[in-house]
Amino acid sequence: MSNLDRQATLSVCGGRGFVVAEPVRELLSPRRVPLGESTEVRRLLPNLGRRMVGAWAFVDHYGPDDIADEPGMQVPPHPHMGLQTVSWLHEGEVLHRDSTGALATIRPRELGLMTSGRAISHSEESPRPHARYLHGAQLWVALPAEHRGIEPHFQHHTELPEVTAPGLSATVVLGTLDGTASPGTTYTPLVGADVTLTRGAEARLPLDPDFEYAVLSMSGEAHVDGVPVLPGSMLYLGCGRSELPLRADSDAGLLLLGGEPFEEEIVMFWNWIGRSHEEIAQAREDWVNGTRFGEVKGYDGPPLPAPELPATPLKARGRAR
Ligand code: MN
Image (cartoon, rainbow, N blue to C red; front, side, top):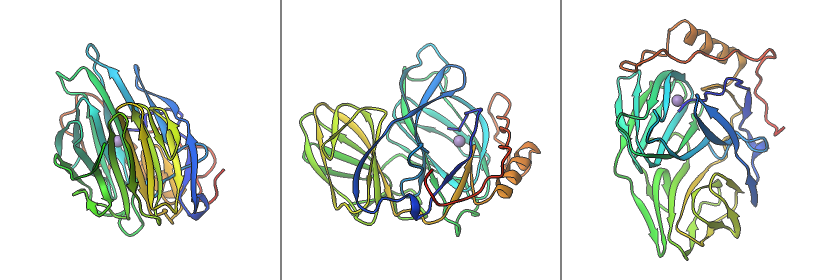
């Protein structure tokens, strides 16, 4: 999905200044962002108080929405650079097209992983016909300096490994959980795992103390390290944990995100991650001029226009505001 916010703002992220070295329990509220005419998403990252979790730099949660009589998701072609996008669904389908020629229908609990590298453009839409309900998350992973200029590519993995315990089943979406690795390509040490808990479950999820973590609730009534986390909210957990206590009062679905703290300071604007104002301004110019980001074939409609750059220059810096 795209950041369709027409009042796009600069976000400066990354660097050790943001990371909490010890275990904490910091509940993050979502910001409601309109997507197009009829839908709305809940944005958890970047958040006013927290910008990244490991290399995870962007988290939107949407649905479940009844789209039986609606077009559903309709995101026209738009560009990305310096990041990977992860499409993750609990219900519904998303038809993905990109400028590498990839065309894929992503279904629930399948990994759609797009690595923009230096430049890519893509569209995402609900296919016709589509399922009644749409429920999912759109996630971005920042690429480190040594890999952010690579050639763009797209991966679609329909089979993902699982970690199980009594009452708990965790699908490893990206990275590694308890020694079990997703087939998706990663460029920094991280994890994204979809955790299903059955009602009454009490479990302890093994973690890496060197990672910082957060848990997004997608459904149900779950307690994360004793804190009730409602669907659409995210609990930031800091670093220094070797396990995470989970409890479920109903069947529940959680998304665990974690990774080694991202050391580089980055600049996020619209759908781009860069390192400087000049780099973002160049990307915008290239999108406006129709160069560099390629062409999405088969989407019925014009591409998204880029928002205006802010009047003050974008600057990477390392402190939380
Ligand atoms: Mn996108």
